[in-house]
Length: 171
Image 1 (tube, rainbow, N blue to C red):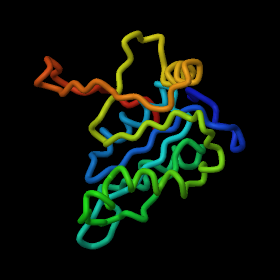
Image 2: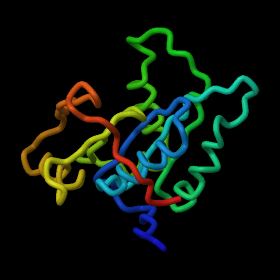
Image 3: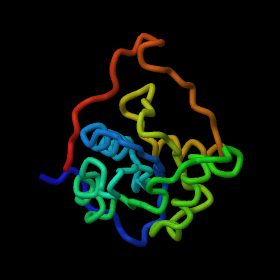
């Protein structure tokens, strides 16, 4: 079964999600990937910041993500594998996300109007209306001349939320 076709390799991107992961359980990571793709992300760039004592792939991350890479939905960057952040002003997760995106295989497909959504592996965006996607947000940004926005945060537990979205759709 195929939920969506593989993306066109030359098509400009409207929405890209950039995420770093560190010891993220595979089921949670696949849920994250699926949810953001369903929300309209055309490509996802992951900065793998895992670290295993023996240097092996932590929890089989590469193998689990292979279908996404093979279909052209995902760029997996391992240049930050085992990286320890020292100076938060010049060496942070935000800088890491910018670096992996600007050096990714999709960098040439970014436009000034591409909506880039930088997130951690435990951060989830939900839409106020289930018919909206991140592509609608990107179109609203373009239509209103916006280049950035803040997201209102709600934490699970503290704000009456008891769990993250569940059910992975693809593998």
